[in-house]
Amino acid sequence: MNKVISRTLLKLVPNELKRPPNRSARHASTFKAAVITEYSKPLEIQDRKQAKLKPGQVRVQISYCSVNSVDNQKFKQGGGDLPFIPGYELSGEVLEVGSNVKSDQVTVGEKVVGLSLENFGGLAEQCVLDADDVFRIPAEVTTKDAAVIAYGHTVALYTFSKLSTLKEKDQVVISAGPAGLGLAAVDVAANIYKALVIGVVDTEERGELVRERGAFTTVHFSPKLLKEILKKTDNKGVKFVYDAAGEPMMDVIGGCASIGGKTFYASPFFHKTIPAPIPHTFSTIVSLKSLRSQNKHLYKTLVNDTLELANENLIGAHISAEFSLDKINDALQFIEDRKCTGKILIKVDE
Image (cartoon, rainbow, N blue to C red; front, side, top):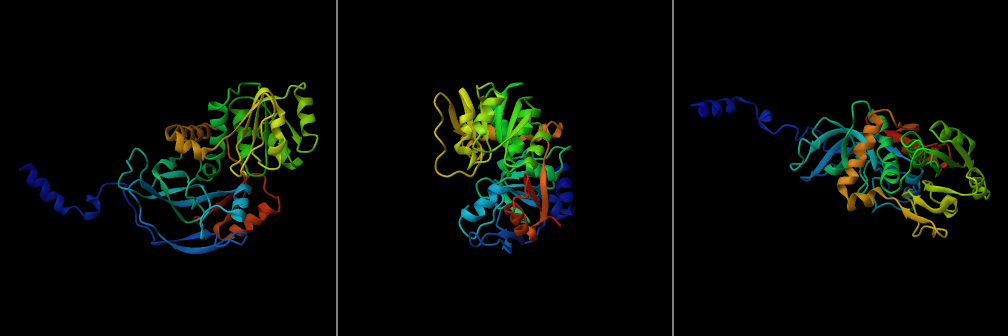
């Protein structure tokens, strides 16, 4: 009898309420995106057709996507098969989830940050990501801040927590270029590990910012760099060197390491080789993309840990400037003109 009643009541329920919750949402079949059609040419805003979602994927309505000087180099020299939608660090709201995505992973309507390190696509109104690359944004972290914290701070946290033994009052040299990776590393090293950060900068404006973010002191990048570092470290060098700027600093900054010291090359834009370590030191490339393929569980744990540190106000975002999606080329020119002191945000959901 109860089963009959249940079946009768079920017929009275609207079809949309019968569907499993949090599986899909209504959305447009096309979306706008900033597209590289030819390298070294301005990006074009185009209408793109929405792709069908695979079982393990998530569709995100993008609010913000970060852009930095490293991206600018990729736009000019390559980053994918053309036409190509760049952008890998983004935040927004979940529009739709695939049939294999469980509710404990993510659900429709949640605010999330995404890292599209393989397929990019972040400079658009929508982006499809693997469910493992989508992370809930904690309550005390804004959607805006999440879009500049998830990548750089996670790379630094991985380096200083898993690849080294950075401790309070340890001296660490960090090259703080205009891309934002260096600022993130300074933030983590100084404010989480209480290390004595020596920031390597190219301008006094950036030096002031790096000190504000927690650096103990700064030095300007010049032919006298090694002499300056040795002077500040009693001619011993430092246990850890973190290069977030890439060329041209990467060719000399490894010389700041002490005997037994380690140099970490964290900039994602490298040519085919990194400099050989100086005698009795070690060097390695730090890659969040490679970590994802090698140990996905650790990758996901580190990103979530980074967001939780931001939730506890132990680390924070630095946004150099903000542009709308249709002003993406103005944003790139802003970087080209060396006005950028960190990451730029592209605001999409206007």
